[in-house]
Amino acid sequence: MNRRKRVLITVASVLVAALGVVGTAGYLAFLRAPDGSPAEACGAGATAKPAVVGAGASMTQGTLGGDWIGALRGRPEFAGHEFVNAGHNGDTAADLLARLDADVLACRPAAVLVLVGTNDVRAGTPLEQYRADLTAIADRLRTGTTARIALLSLPPLGEDLTTGINQSLAGYNAVIQETATRTGVDYLPVHERLLELLGPREDRVPYDFSFPLALTVATRHYVLGQTWDDIARDGGRALLIDHVHLNDRGAARLTDVAAAWLAATP
Image (tube, rainbow, N blue to C red; front, side):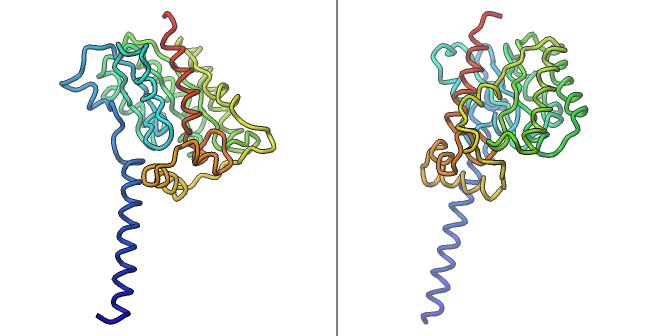
């Protein structure tokens, strides 16, 4: 075999290996079902424990970034509950509404935590449409279940709150709080509690999300074994691994907010 062919074979082997590594990370972060998915937790083999459902998008799915549903599941005080992860990557409020019966009501939940809207902010969903979708979600949960219901405010997008996208996000969070009050469900101040963890204002990193960045972050975690906190810290961020998804520190604060609500007497 001549030298040129050997070089080509070596390069091809390296490329195949690299694609395999990236493909594995992509699958684990974006394609696999979360632990305790509705199909797994609410199917024929479901337990008789009261179900607590987390409903939302990728921040709830928890395969890219900190897994707050998994953290709740691991708390000994909630051992008597079944935690269902009804998060789905990329969902808007309209997407969640479309699958609400199959993925949430079918579980006959005792409690539902709704965290959805980040993708509406990123897509520029008009506030009135977002309000209508969120209201329909709250109303369907109220009429279709006997569950306690909470709407969670959205984490920041990037950590510089002066950017345009965070100024827009403030309007969506106002809709969440207003909708909770109007529909008679609970409001959980996740955004407010997360801001307590941010560093000095001049050190905050602005929003700069991209899919290649998210894939790089996933590879660093799933292939290289780096923690979500280390990845965020390397990028100069206190809460977010890729300007959208929470690190473990941020997810732990979200978990604390949710846990306090679950533990409270109805």
